Image (tube, rainbow, N blue to C red):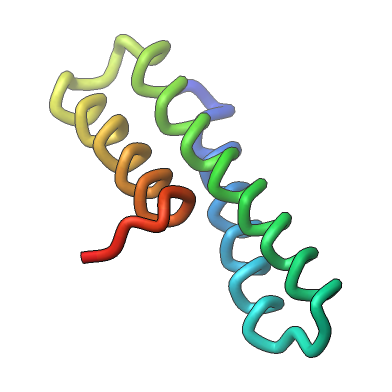
Length: 85
């Protein structure tokens, strides 16, 4: 696995977590907007890291690469698209 893929996905998940936690305890609208922006950056980095990692890293098994694409689609769909179960 390329060394930047887990780093980018990990940074995205960390920013996503920080945005969600900050949004829970936000008092005013500016803080909620900031939390939403941090969360969106986290979703973007996580999704891009998973998609680009699945497309570039040919050393991984095809099932792992498919799982990375599926995870990226679920993260982007549920968190950005507002899809609910």
